[in-house]
Every structure is written in C-alpha cells, then in structure tokens.
Amino acid sequence: MNSKRPVNLDLSKFHFPLPAITSILHRVTGVLLFIGIAFLLYGLNLSLSGEDGFAAVHGIMQSFLAKLIVWGIVSALLYHLVAGIRHLLMDMDIGETLEGGRLGAKIVVVVSIVLIVLAGVWIW
Amino acid sequence: MDMVSSVTNFGRSGVYDWMVQRVTAIVLALYTIFMLGFILLSSDLNYATWSALFSNTWMRIFSLMALISIGAHAWVGLWTITTDYLKVTSARFIVQALCGVVMFIYFVWGVQILWGL
Image (cartoon, rainbow over all chains, first blue to last red; front, side, top):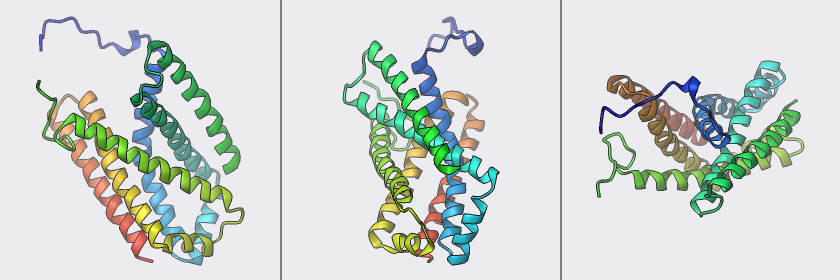
C-alpha cells in the first residue's frame, strides 16, 4: 500500500449520506444484539425453569427498566433484520444502483421506525 | 488473483465468510420471525404453552440451528468490525478472543437451556 497517499479520517468533517448511516447502524445494532443475547438467554433460562421462573420473568417484565431493555433489544433486532433483508435483496441485484441504494436506505429507515414504534406499543 | 485472507477469518477466505453470513442470516431471520409470531399470536402465553413449544424436538433443533448461526454470524460481523476499527494487533486480538469466549459461553448456555429441562 502506498503510504504517501493523502488520508483524511477526521470523521467530524465527513458528510454521511443516508446509505452510510443505515450501514453504520447495521453494525451498531449487530454489536448491541451480541450483548443483548445475554439478556435473552437469561430470560429464556428463567422462563423455562418452571412455573415460578415463568412467573418471575412476567414479574420482571412489569418494570420500566426491563421494558426499556427489551424494547431496545427488539428495536436493534428489527432494524438489523430489515437492513439485513435489504442486503440479501441487493445480493440478488435488487436496488444496487446509486438511486436504488438511496431509495433502499430510505425504505429501511421508514419500515424500521414503523416496526420499532409498533414494538414499543406492544411492550407497554 | 490474490484473495483477501487472514488467520482469524472464519473460513480463511472472504468468499466463504460472505456465504456463511448469508446462510446464517436466513436461519436467524426465520427464527426471529417465528419467535415474534409465536409470542404475538399466543394471546395468553403461559408456562404450559411455552415449555411445550421448547419440549418439541423440532423446536430444539431449530433453536440449536439459530444458536450455531448466532455464533458464526456474530463472528463474521464482529471480525469485520474489529479489523476495520482496531488497528493495533494486540488490542484486536484481545477483543476478538473475548468475542470468541462470549460466543462459546452463549452456545453452551443455550444447549443447557434447551436440553436441561
């Protein structure tokens, strides 16, 4: 690699178009989900441990903090899923042009927001 | 043509990793949609329904597939992210090793939940 090439990695000076934002969010939600799995496995373990454990999970889910954490995980999951489906479609040459990429990013944002709001309504 | 390869790559080749990422993504998408659908459609979810679901052999196989997919999918994703942002080899190695340990814990924990009923 030519080490003399000019490099500008000052992220604060970058202009991020929407497709760049949806891409970085896919990464961020992926990392969040990796951490979130610990909470999901904890809940699954407790809920399957018996009647008492199931009731305990139900009890935990009454608290605001637990609802917020679950909503956060479900939101990350929904976004990651929607953005991931877009990836698979792009593998099939759907929405691969510059315009298609911009439109796809907008669709991902709109669909995710709708699903995340619905998930919030469902959890509360 | 020289393929991009690294010793910490999941399959020692970018093309293989790309394929693993897609196959596991489909498994995880199906599992996510199934689980969300099951919880949403069970109007009054109780312990009996919940434990009956996870006592089915097919559900345990499906869940184990999802668990393995999480490990492989997260490895490819986190490998990509760590190689992009962590330029210091020792730091990258430590973070990647930590991710590997967490994945292994998730896997063993998940197996224990599924078969330890």
